[in-house]
Length: 316
Length: 262
Image 1 (cartoon, each protein chain N blue to C red):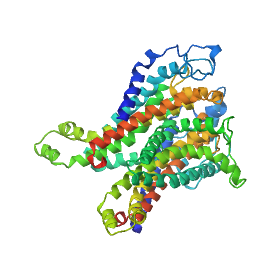
Image 2: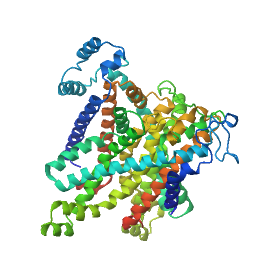
Image 3: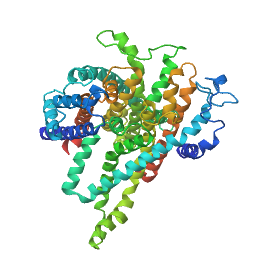
């Protein structure tokens, strides 16, 4: 992997994000309900609305507003939240770390569970365990997050068992146990759909690799099966798994909105829904841009990891 | 086979469901609130004593046809854009692709939420929003499908014969590019059903007194600890509907692509 490749990819990510800023800005410009009207309420007089529009700069042409906003974004200034009257960067920053702690927990557990499941299904192809893993993965891929979350709540947080809290959040640096008990259900909800996708992908890649000539050669050489799988088969089926994980970041970043809303997790998703309800445009813009940036960067990261795992990509 | 059977069941429920409902889905029966399954109410009753089976059957069309409608619209718009980009090439292709890359960087559910907020809540608006959110992804698939076909001999032969470009696109390229588009659309229907139900659940899609399944889950949530059937019945139904399309789509892909069906 050359430096040139990295720079090219990074430039592509930046270009994508610039396009996203246009899209985000366009969407917030055509949102019904002017921000000034939203702040003053329905009973604000026309003069008051006009004065506030002037103060917020909403009376200027759209391209001036865009460049003004864009210039701020570049230096990390997303403006003031219309509803919370705090700088957007502060509000969104706190929520970002809360979301990140949930997303990382979910992603780590998924990786630890999904890859071995996929490998197992491929090795035991056609047996009962393959079938069970297959059925599980279809169920996982077909359940929207709110259904998984609701069913988990009914069975694990209900008065019958009452094992886990039904919602809420405790920061990791306040209490590790408190964080852990609150993160289980939301992370499991997010994890189910991802585990389904990733284990299925690993299974299909692994089966293809296991049927290849070099695996036959390794077996004929008299290598033990364990070594064939670990040294020869697994590394070659991991690159596609990484690609799927990075594509699934899209599901994760979308799903987290619903999951945070259901479990009262004070992250970006919950903040976004609040902002959408209140037409808090600067917050909507910042969150959308942030989630798109995370998605684009995670795709870039996965390309780099794939290039490291698979020499054919590196020299292509 | 399982996929096909499930799909037939789901489509059957969507078409005939409302006519098969044993009770009026909106009728209150205060004496039988929050009951489990019984001979009289096969799937139990909700917080108003309404028959859950009847509500489920009545809500099937709005849940399933939402997925089909949103996907059809999204696939239609996406295919047109993808075919234009793929056949035009050059700077038109580059500009379209850069815009698509940008739109694809916004997670689909987030994109849908933004558009729903612009359009306002409701079934039709939600369907349009999902269709718009699907368009960039479908356009990319249609484009790559067209690109892989554009250089085939039979297309080059048609070009050499001097056929007009609309003939080449409609008669040579599109029929042969359709496979991946159809497979992707089938799996997308599952996803559209899931997003539609999610919007209903969040109060941004179907509105009461609709019996759309996502809305059913949302309305019963307060009572879920007293009768789990109220949320489990519509929840499992959504999963089964999505699973039918997922299984069928995968089977379709395997039969179209021999390499994948070892």
